[in-house]
Length: 165
Length: 419
Image 1 (tube, rainbow over the protein chains, first blue to last red):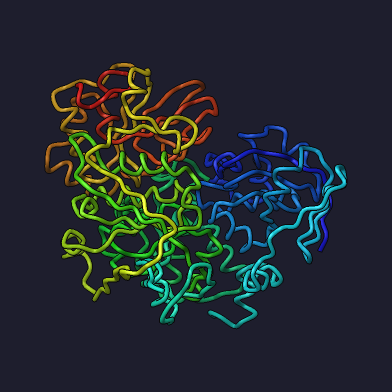
Image 2: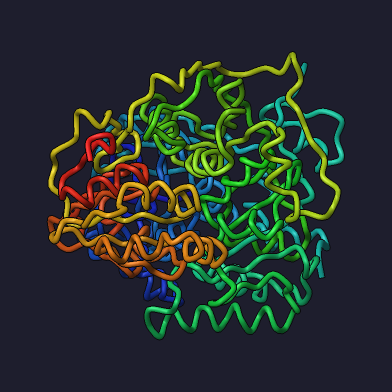
């Protein structure tokens, strides 16, 4: 799978309260919820984002609450991938479990600037910065996690294995 | 290679003799928890994926604590979804208004978490139960759904940082100051993906409520879990609450740690985390005098009986400043009742504070104490992110119940030793 888009750039410790503030967590419909994605850190994000665009941030992206609403609204907004130097652990597993592509790559996080055009090849983990004519190598996922992603999320992979009833 | 306490619990629950850091395992869980925000998402995912039964109706806990008593129609409908699901699957541990409390104070109190157990919860502060010598960690709604359907969860085995605690806490210094000090020292990702294992004579000297507070905020350092060894205080706490047999795990003597950090508890000062990250900590001496408009004493971090008692000891016979809205929230019905029996509620109300029924409300900017533009709060909660408690220009200073009570009286951030 390949995604290509322009980038939105943020700093360290982007927390789940700014990704999707708790005041909206009484909203059940993902599309309605997604209208408030990144609202408290980037008020125009929802107006500016296009299908396939890429969020790039520094360390500890998604820290704070366990709310799965955070990777969900990013996914529903059409974001093709989040690249960060590191992810907070609950956000990391939530993104994998719901099939929202993420990549850990410190070099890409540091070198990519806002509005750069970036292409990602998930097979190889190669991130190409088209604007700057640079490439960066992301860490590959372990096979177990790749299995969850290729099944389309945790629950689908469990169903495929015949777990539960 | 020896294993840490956490690694031993994970190995036992995965049916393995040993595990090593970085290993991916599938482990059996003892309890899966969700609340009125994360529960409905888990329920919908479970049903959408075609699971028709739950793994064990006695090992799922659904606690209606975030937007309750319901603040609006939408949040009422989220509780309704949990209520209907619980009725359909005969979920024994469904806690609605009247029985509920803030989940991480409630579950230990009800004996639903015990030493050596493995607990997942769709709430980041699920790490609280490490105080009992359990492995517990926050997950998302999909993990919760998978846990409800299969009784299993996947984990990457964490490495650990050992915190060797020595000495005893000075007057007006509590578990909250210990964990804020630690987060200030290692940063909000200082323990990312790792266990925080607390040990030493200083750990044994801490009360259970202090241990709950410390483990509760392990997530604020990015940790997977926080954990204390099981001792006579732990066993005393679970007596009369847990009736099933428990397994006590101890770290191997040759367990490997990424780092060992020594902390002398007797040298700690009341500690404040300034906006907008829990790592922006300062001793009270550098922050005092800052004007506040609201003081919140409660939450899964600091809504337990020790917290209520210290707040009452400071507020007794005094009045809160007229310009400070003081909101006190005992975390569970049992704690609320205990406050009534000990006369604490009378002290609070006479001081000019209000006392709320258990709710997470103000901590996450849900209800029961939202901040307006530019307002500043002192709060015993766990996060001070931008907009966490209200308007994005409002400010949250995280502190202990003693500091929050003292500051409510003076109207400015205050050292409790000075009121």
